[in-house]
Length: 294
Image (cartoon, rainbow, N blue to C red; front, side, top):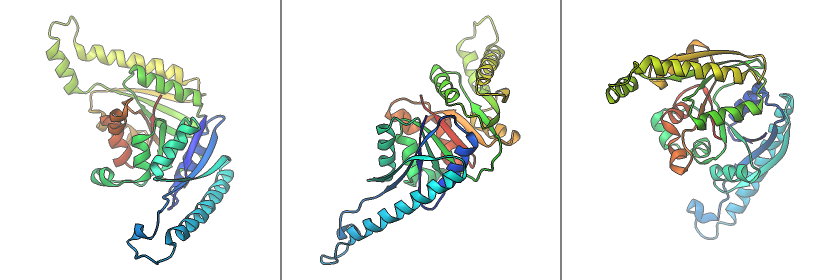
């Protein structure tokens, strides 16, 4: 498993390191990368001709700063029981540079620190994390707070679509042995049930309990598959609440450390929207999020 760890300043990447250490992926190969903007000349700053090679001097400073950041990050990783197999300084727009590097090494996961934004800030702030989240083809881990060295509690929200099943199977193959329990959450909101009931009035069964029973059975099947990770405790929730509300309640009631869900989308526009569930959870909520892509 190849993991790209984005090293940034300020050092919110430390949260991502701590979360990776807590997840304890088996056979993880970590690439620590620091992306810097390359400047083109004094005109970048609106400086007059004859100002000297300001951009070149700034780039030297950026390079030295990046080397220091990567060296310090490697030492932190060692202290957490992990090792950076590669350390790379990337140029160009940081978000694109990280995505391109992840493609070039065939990475499975990009791990980043993230500062919480509100809905408007999250939409407008051109942050590296947001750019990677929108454009990357890989799964994304957004760590939003410090993590202690203890087993993790997770909520896995799933619609049991073929794509999500493929994502979960990949997650199982990564073998994160640092998880103590996972709550499987599936939602069949009341409004959806009412709409389906109106569209199919002649069905021989009541649509709501029938769908809920199907989801409960699928949750149970997924719980058995997750047993491959190790001796973790799993729980099933099937709810009629809207999915965003259901996620917030499950995260709060289980005191969960990490929300796991799928990026509902395969092409560019699907990734740009990230689905009506994944995107708000990633940019607006305070809990850490893993967005799976297969």
